[in-house]
Image: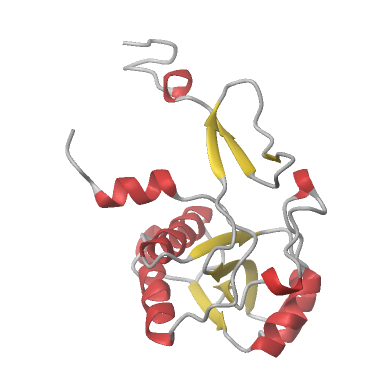
Length: 198
């Protein structure tokens, strides 16, 4: 089988919710945002904009307005010394598009997470956030709507994937190791028509 580094990153990537206090350099953070900028955009409207949050006081103000790992609450919530030092706010500039396309958001977010992993940086895409309060903290104007945040940092945990078709809820064992169930390829792949396995 041919070696493909991007494929390996994609298979390896897992959501991480506990981070070390090690700093990320600004040039690396800019490269991660640049990867988002280069993502596909419906009709090439490019309505997404990004707020890179690097100030520690600001990240601390934002944290109470985020929710982490509902299936394993409260163990999945990072402690004070495990919180991310960085966030990327993904925002929609409504003057560029009156109808934002979710495919743009997904492609840009995935580019952020994969390019971060290429630098050995972990990520957590946060949609369960208080957009109103975080928008105030970030001084977003009315025509710019916050969609989500991506937490970034060097990982302090290593979640593991298990293949199963029986359950989809992620969980932690007694040692605190995080497991993420993924449906096996043979359960979701069909050939030429639905239900055909070869």
